[in-house]
Length: 157
Length: 272
Image (tube, rainbow over all chains, first blue to last red; front, side):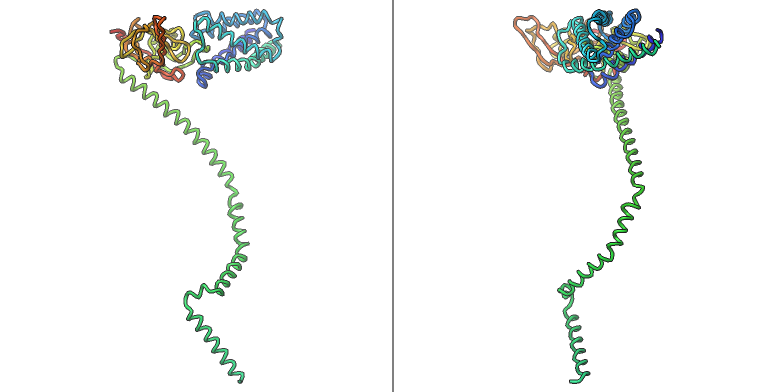
């Protein structure tokens, strides 16, 4: 269990480095959410008792890299995690296209939540990076899910 | 006519011909016969030298250039190395220019104690506009510390750890700075919109505001020193049914290209 958690947190920090340092250097307004894929991976492959604490701790870590009010980032991600965990019996998450669509939708939903809580009416001319970010988040989600599931399989055997 | 007479006759004719040819002078060299001889010689010379020339070309173009491929590869490698070096030098030059600008700026503003820092990360969300810099409380950074760069106001510190600080950029929706228009001294509050532009709020519609007016910090609230450049008025919309005008301001600082910043120390006289 600990080895799995350590590996997941290492991936999380690598992910933050790409999200907060590398991508803004390439395109200042582009944000790609790698964490959504990790959340879906937790739901599919890791028991709730291990996945939920990881999501809470990770979201708290992510809070340190955002100007959002304290608690908003954990709130948003836990909301997404619990919602997806609830609907996992209705939607076939193992399908790669479903994972991509989920990544895309979750990105937009999270941005919507942040917009509401930031009391900002619109993203003023940021439609293009928003769409790009959503598409890339959707595209990267299956890869993140695959990494999480592979780690679980490796450490389980 | 005997045989000897015939010989004498031929001898005369031959002598006459030689004399005639000699007497024709230099222009005779372009006569038809001479031309034919020269052309004939040219053909002869080509036929004789062609194989030699062919062998010579083979030697020069193939045998002699066996090492050219290796030399070419080496030159390509050298060229690539030079191009990489040029890129590094360009980057060093731009960094040097940036640092020189910062140094000049620091020299010009001796009234402030400026603490330099570099950008570490930007906000992980698209909505909020914050950044983390590589200096913290150990480098005299503190909460509400004004952050500027040579172009103008960048934001203020909202969180400090030992070696890092979180900066709220003026474009963030949560940012609000007391400001005034430099020329008319009209006061207002500059608020972030989440987009590239910021808005100047609480300025009456009846006030005289023009596009291009410079907006500076007013020094109220005691966070930012008075007179720091914030931006220029980009758009003014007045509605007779509204008390306040909608004013859009273009920040002086390009928030997408911030690299080096300064924190202003505590020992600054903030207001008048």
